[in-house]
Image (cartoon, rainbow, N blue to C red; front, side):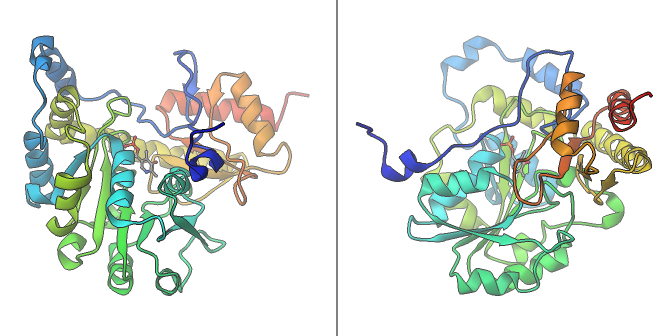
Length: 360
Ligand SMILES: *Cc1c(COP(=O)(O)O)cnc(C)c1O
């Protein structure tokens, strides 16, 4: 017999993108940063002696909280450091959503949300985006009608790349009666000319939490470090009640602090990604592949019926190029392609061109 709780027994679990260990693979499937982390992160790692691991790490990750607070011009009390952004998602659910409550997300969006809602045994309300991936006009009304305790909006959006304005989010936060979690995993790649700044929302609204991660913008997906930004009333229950004691380890805290200290280095990489994003978009469009406007480090691409998205995915994989195919409504004719280095993007475009127009 099974010892699992019935709702755990019934669930599927998260299926991560493929993570091949071979360096020969051009890996454009899980939105990792194509550039290495700052050399200050390497220096910070070199400075850690294993003897220092005998003791527990700083329990509130004090130094990281302070550097993150100064970066965002908020107080340390507005920051909760977490083991990847994913832990923040789980913490918000644990703290603010009961098993009889409803969590609302847009469809499509990050495929981990439904899995975490299932673990929590909560009800999931998936609200379809419009045909052009914009938000339905009655989104807030739908949330309130369902009495949702939590709504998760990913901005800029995954997997489409679309950006909502901070003004829209402010109106949404004011209208919605539950907690609004804005997942900003890709915010570092937003073009500065968009003037997007959501941090002031945490002072205007008592129900807004922002998710940030070092996985994408700071090239540290392997480190597992993220954080939440929010009003102290939302942050402190997670900080002092629901979080695992010592949820972030000494090595991660030290490296994450060094990464934020070298934000200027990271920002130079974000600018390069934006330039490459523009170029890759043009190259793909020239091949007859439509792309959606993206403020992230990936492009969602419409693949022509011949060969079709799955066949193109497979053909690229045979050439050691990995992109992301989602076997999901509205995504089966599309591929999500992470922005690589200029060299990687060129290899990708050449490979796609050969698949679309094989030599006679
Ligand atoms: C990458 C990502 C996260 C957080 O990832 P971590 O590696 O756990 O920090 C959260 N939301 C979305 C949409 C993401 O793509």
